[in-house]
Image (cartoon, rainbow, N blue to C red; front, side):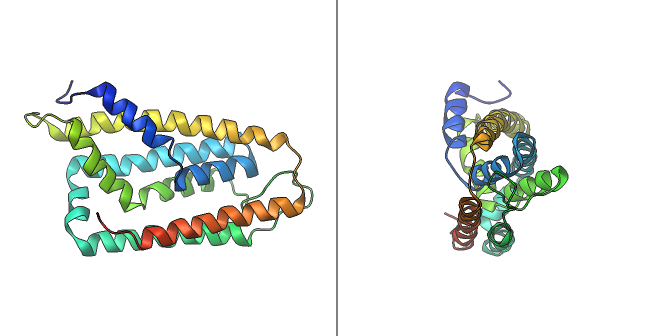
Length: 209
């Protein structure tokens, strides 16, 4: 279909990759725990839109530039890493209100939550390289319109990923009904912040591989 093959294998592989924890998972979980299911879903939808940056980049060949150019990869990598560290520091420094009843991770309006989710994904060059390495395996070498095949596979991957992220937001938000003490909320917020800082540092040190 549209120059692709082995779609069931592609879907199964994509789902396994989607459930693997990463920066996106951490961000959705933290927002759902701190602000409820609406914030978690806003984060999930932002991440889903951010994924389209990489899908279109791969279709247009821009991801190949990241793969071939050490300078381009390094610049995008450092921007993405700096943003993850910034998010981590924001969560680390956030104070848990005494009457919140849930863990806090720097409460924010839905628009900001959505935008942060978008940037968390869009500024990660490893995602771009993933699409460049993963999707061509399911595109026919004789496909007449390879960019269209990239978009088709990307749409399937992003649709499934967004469904998973929305489920994750709902499941995590369910934990809000459990009473959590202020010290525990502060500890959880700082733990999530520290994890984002570590993810940012890991991205900064990542090789193009």
